[in-house]
Length: 460
Image (cartoon, rainbow, N blue to C red):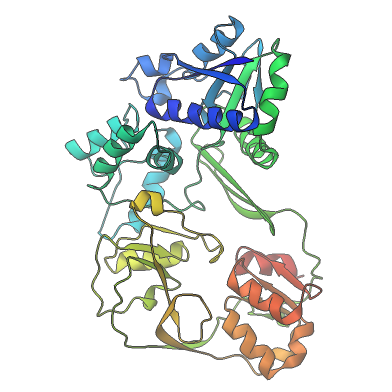
């Protein structure tokens, strides 16, 4: 059987088609595949800002029409480019925007290590290499591109080595950061690939089926539904990111027109009984009392650091811009930036289980060191501070607990073993694992994204 794959003509579009072709050949070794390209209306017009282009399929309509005319069998799209309404006669196989301009002004200034009073977003067109060249050779200060695009261009290999080398040379002249998902959610369906075929081509169903990912399809449908609920189209200043995790589905939404801001963990509700505010720890008016002191250690020669708290980076250490700095969350990021440090990204408060996955961006395999306190059990940890957590004496009289530190939890149950029978919550990550290790799978445990949402859920 012979199949023609159709895509836009850019290097990234051709590479994404090669991803599909590779997957198809793995499932059907005898399949003959031809890859062809077509220039879309959005590619032909390189001057009009994206938000002024037609809202429905500026980059996809020409490809969809080719399927109906039988000029190709399967069209490969970046799913985010597809309108929420399908083109007549085709069906979808799932697998620089107003949003960026708006969120840049709200989010970026506090993440930069120098004072910024205002961010002006200017339109830029062209493929990834063209946009990077405009940044390096122009007077602008920064460029926002999809991380997935860079990962694919830099990491695919043959036959795109020259494209990767050109992007690598330009990227090495820049500082980079991965913007936080909580405050800068991506465009709905960002990074997902969509395959489109003519409704009449039922013979292709069995060819495509082995390369589809049901989990990705489900997540993308949710992101696209959020977009559709707000009007659809790339003209919407809306970001919607969905992460599927074993403990639930994390949803981040920022929608300017509706004034909507959401950071939530969805899925099966926790079976915690509700209680009164005097029975929780910490209470609304109660901070986690801890005395911190620095531990003077020499600066290691590592090229990548994970930082749990801003004060974990010693004042006497120097900062090499080639070293990658990854913060635990945006609070730590902002505090490090206020100290004049360039931060490359953060785990959004989701814990160590969320690997940075930035080796491709950095251009090398990174060797991570975690800067933390002297009682941490993290792998590759370097103690730069000592923490003396002071727990209230009436802790055994309370029933519901939110732990932000695995060490604090372990010390509490060592002192008061009866606490194991309490209702223990935490964020995702190592603290959750410390709780599970102590109370077992049958223990009363739950995951919340932050202490404030836990307090709202458990207090009467």
